[in-house]
Amino acid sequence: MIIYLVIFITLIAALIASASQLLFKKRLNIRVHGMMHLIRTVLNDRRILAGLAGYGISFIIYIYALSKAPLSVVYPVFASSFIFIAILSYKFLNERISPARVVGILIIFIGIVAIALSYH
Image 1 (cartoon, helix red, strand yellow):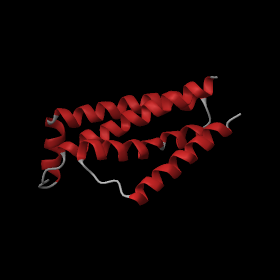
Image 2 (cartoon, rainbow, N blue to C red):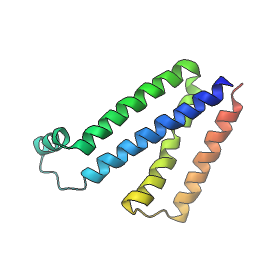
Image 3 (tube, helix red, strand yellow):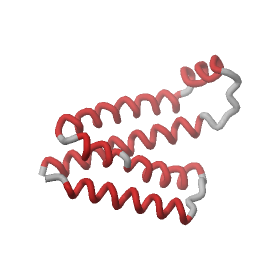
């Protein structure tokens, strides 16, 4: 039973990390004029700082999941972030999801399910 909880919280960590990436991308759709401009942008933007906080929260959840289950289960489940990113990018950034990308997402999903179910 504990493995299902670990899988669930790992999925939550992956979703938070994906949402953080979305926050980064939405703000960084600007022209960056050098490293100092990028640093000032990062330090002065609430969305980027929220994304960094989300990454921190995601990391803590991920480390907790690792303390409860094998890396060979937790890490592949965290790869669900690839699925979340595709969906969030489509929904909020109007990115296209081609048929080939749908196939890739399905393969990732099937792999995650197979690994999660293989744990004893």
